[in-house]
Amino acid sequence: MKRFIKVLIWLAVAAVAIAAIKFFFFREKPIPVSVFKTERGAVEELVVNSHAGTIKSRQRAQLSPGISGTVAELTVRKGDFVEKGMLLLRLEDSEYRAGVDQAEKNLIAAISAVNEARLALEQSERELKRQRPLAEEGAIPAATLETYESRRDIAKASLESAEARIKVARAQLNGAKSTLAKTRIYAPFSGVIAEISTEVGEWLSPSPPGVNIPAVIDMADLDSIYVSAPLDEIDLAKVKNGLPVRISVDAFPDSDFLGYVYRIAPYVLDIEKQNRTFEIEAVFNDPSVHKLFLPGATADVEVILERHDNVLRIPTYAILEEDKVLVIQNGKLAAKKIQIGLKNWEFTEIVEGLSEGDEVVVSLDRAEVKEGALVFVE
Image 1 (cartoon, helix red, strand yellow):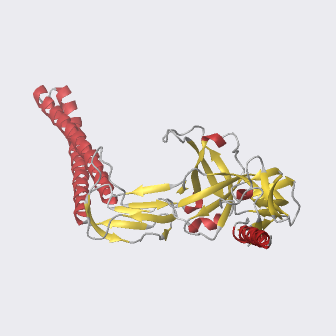
Image 2: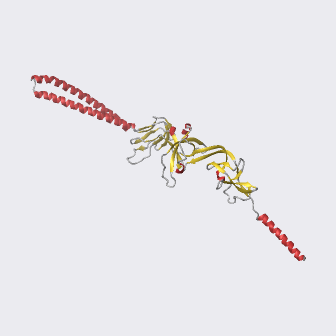
Image 3: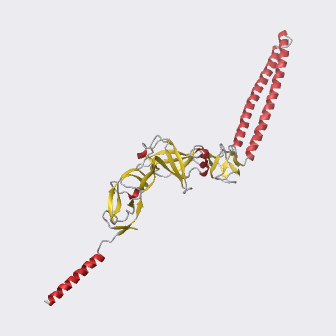
């Protein structure tokens, strides 16, 4: 009997031990979670560019000399601001100046020849005038009169030829001056030098027909700066002219610039077959920021379709399918249905289901975080 009692006691002890082991080693352990307290703030509905936009200028000039020559003078560097009419580049021009000098001499000679031809014509006409009455009276033979008439005709033809040579000489002078002018590049408007692709001493030649050679100087008018950005075609019906935009530029990572939609392209680009886009042009509200940027720089655009201020909001990534969030009730996770309003990639407006200060779980990337799990806030 005693032996039997001892067995029972040992069995009881073993059962208690097994239960204790299960309790301490196999019980469900609470997992840590991160939470976000529902707050008030602004929420915007946005359309963002599908890939990077580009800063452009409505007035841009790509400049190159119209003739061949060696760069003798380069008065600007990339990034310089210039005024309209300022000399930017000059080629060695002694040969072309010599051409102008020779053309001027040729013109002077042609003018002198005309003057001489005119005097000769006037002289032949006077002589003919004197001889004609004598021929009519029979004082001189008719052949003599014909000789004077022939001299007059020759003088007249000589004058006409000399006058024609003046036109040629003037055209040659204008051409020489035009060629000389091509040795210089002047700023066609006030703006910034965006790019320079030459240096003093380099030999330059015009682009042959059908060959595209980069411009020597590329300049842009910063007063007409705008951003061209591609948007996904699915958003075409949402975007309207005049909608506000927020512009971010890589060169200024800590700043955003406000503007508005100025123009929407009337067609969809099909360059990328799987992701067709349409272009918008966005301009800056503050023109004084134009000089901060250079055409060609990348920029991103967010079109603000609608904005609600001072509304309840939580991070968008805290929302599960079917508009539910996870909350903590009695140490466990519970799903709660909510009603949402505006949303973007960062925040979502809460219309119903949460109050200010309510905590929602945001660490949804952890596999153990699911409805019914035992948790604690880390």
